[in-house]
Length: 112
Length: 114
Image 1 (cartoon, rainbow over the protein chains, first blue to last red):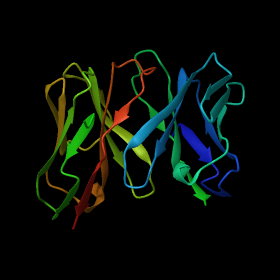
Image 2 (image 1 turned 180 degrees about the vertical axis):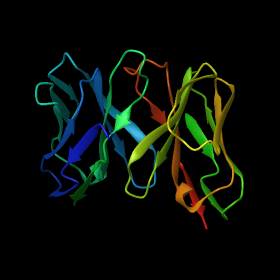
Image 3 (image 1 turned 135 degrees about the vertical axis):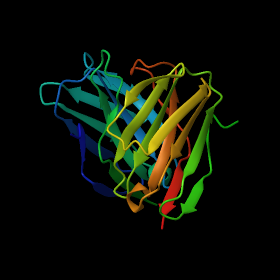
Image 4 (image 1 turned 90 degrees about the horizontal axis):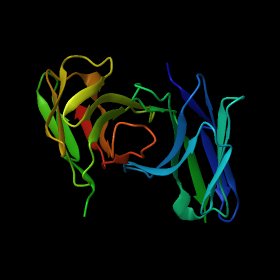
């Protein structure tokens, strides 16, 4: 069954505002990754957070992980029109299970 | 320089036909993947190869057969195409099979079966 579920399904904001997307998952994980997909393109890796980490930053991105709640959030600060894309979380269970399981994604629209 | 490339980008074909999608990566990665993304954007792993060895084979109809002639190439052959096979197929690669490595995705192949 599907591991990750993002919410909201769609988010529309104005340029300069912050965007927060959430991801919940069902079973214990080893790592959680966030990917971005621009329309008609492949996915691009944004950030990886390990199960023993609580927060990670990369430029305008901030990711948190709460393993007790089985959830993660992706915050994009000072959004730009170019941030318009779908954002997916993906989890793995580590060990010999080599599979990344993706959520359904959040479609973010940043209006200029 | 394209890191992960796929051909063709678009593929329109009729039910019952056989088709292939090719993927090449120039990153020197050991592991390659095929994913299927449906019309609702749900992305699901199909196959993964590590150093030409199959390590993931999800519940996929056996009409789908991957082939990895070498580490840099992973092709997908589909027999007897069905309407439900219409989707976008993504190839990806990573440094190794350990999932702390990020995956690099190709641009996708949009398959339409009529």
